[in-house]
Image 1 (cartoon, rainbow, N blue to C red):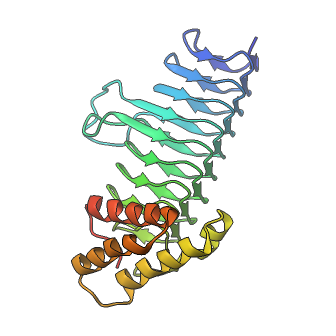
Image 2: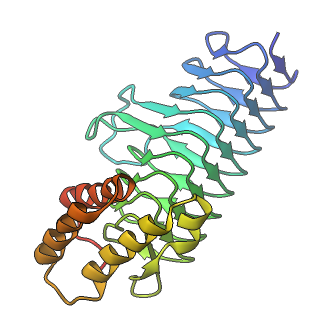
Length: 263
């Protein structure tokens, strides 16, 4: 049997693994699926067409799977998909997608989402991300793996934040943030390579040197963006395999940027 508090309201059609725990006064709707090892604290609400994977910890007062805060929404059966081993702290709010995108909000694996964070409709959050208290992701935001977003930061709709990037405290992010970079300040600017994050994740000295070269070309060379991208591509000729992958990740991100990059 699942471990469901007597005061919780769990719809009979919801699918919960046998070891899921549900706290007092929590409400779980009919289209919810929760995987093994997950726990839901008291006074949480999980609704909508929501699928939650294994070993997630959802704390008290979270609101997961509510309808998108989009005035165009007309009740379509859009979805929320959450992966494995995520921590969602108090008062986190995550909405389902909209038909203006592909109808699904996706949260990956191993993310640490702190109190009062809002994840809006159609967001794509990768793996191993940290969203500090009160960070807000507007609709259609994409966040790459291992990104960190500082507390009280707001990310404008349709913005992309690259893998391994760091967004500082109280940032206003209205343009795309390239991978590996640290952005901060008002107005927002790239300050440096996210060196601490890269070292924590065991990037080699050679990889870090290559990423610093890309940073110099984008932010210190005074080159027009197109020429900086061309020279970043040229770095691949002398790079090792790991650094080539880092260069390609940067090139792919810059090619996909739609709001211009922080520069």
